[in-house]
Length: 141
Image (cartoon, rainbow, N blue to C red):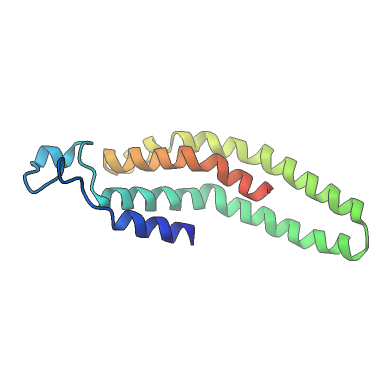
């Protein structure tokens, strides 16, 4: 839902009439001074799909693994084992996902290598750098 709201907001952004009005030249439209709503939407879509592949998919798999063994321990009334499973999950998640943050900080260059425009690559890279550490803690909490 959060991604849908962001996409709706970014898709309805209006251009700055002073910088990007009817008199905007081709050079202004290609520079960072005038970034259109389509550029923001493209960078958000690229960054969110990249984060889904690199961070959300492995995190969901980890959660599914925990959901398989935790109810068994709870049903056997082994509450201490439940706590041990949870603590192991938290530690292993932090240990395994911290290395995933390193490529996410350089993902802008990957986008440029794939042929994305400079503006979209820069904005998508910034989004990944800012949001990625919080997504890791989404699974821990």
